[in-house]
Image (cartoon, rainbow, N blue to C red; front, side):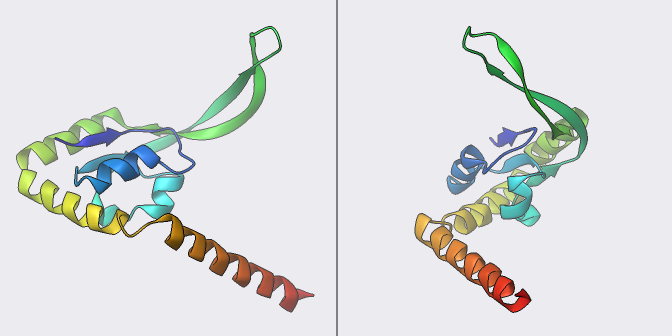
Length: 132
């Protein structure tokens, strides 16, 4: 009973956020957005390497064409299995982490996110004024 989210990269990780909000223990790749917004103490971060990725998009004929190259995480499958076994063997611990994660993510709302964005923009603009 866990949410397993071995992703190559996320702009936000909304499905992970929603799963954590329910109290499910979360196994996830600790890279990109989840690394920035989800404290490791609330879940089970998975080891990963990095790999080159080619992003494609369909052309006007529906054929995929190269769009750009980027980098993505390569989640360690053995570590995912290890985390799943840990949750199975220590389910009380997993439920406790899930409860803490739920409390944490439920505080992240559109209002708190917008307020934080305004705060970051003000800091940035203040730095720009000071540099000018």
